[in-house]
Every structure is written in C-alpha cells, then in structure tokens.
Image (cartoon, rainbow, N blue to C red; front, side, top):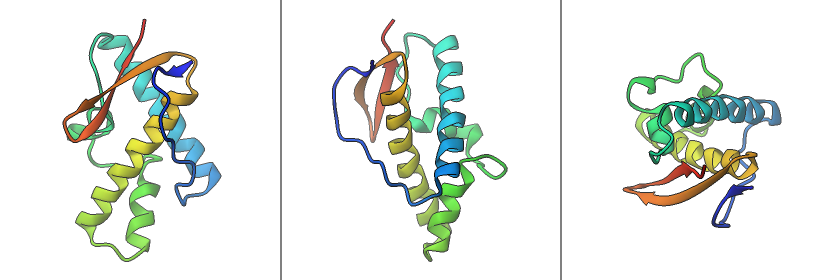
Length: 116
C-alpha cells in the first residue's frame, strides 16, 4: 500500500535503530490522529510537529536535533536540518503504512493525504 506514487526514500538518518523506531512510532501516532480528525486535508511534517508542537524536548524526535548539534551546527541550522530529517522519516513511515497516501507539493514541503 503506502504511497500512491513511488518515489525516493531515505534509509540512513544517522541515528540509532532504536531512536529511528521510536521516531517512526511517534510520527505514525501523529498521522493517525490527523487522519481521524482531518481525513480530507493534506498534511506535512510541519503540520504534525511544528507550530504549537515545535519544542521536541522530551519526545523521541529530539534525537534528530541533537544529532545536528553534535555535528557542530548552530541552533538554527540544527532545527532546520532536523525538520528536513523529519520530513524524510515521515515519508518512510507513510511508505511502510498499511493505509494508502497520496502526495502533493504543499509549499516548501511535501504534503500527504490518506486515500480512503
């Protein structure tokens, strides 16, 4: 199932397999909440984990930010790169999901919507 259009997926996120699994599980929960409440709307990673959900401290997503800080990036650059990583992880979560999702370009980010 997964994504209607086949496209490139990233597999290496330079975090531990345990951390990646936790990030994927966390994101899948967010996706299922979105789908339950906003079935017919496209979403991007920033819709799920941006805005009011911007502070990732205490969540599995924080490892993405810490990875970039550990590489010597500034706080702002680490936030930007962690957000990009999150978009790629989201794409892989949807590609592995039992449901089917279509994609579109949603401004600067890729958008997805559950195909009912």
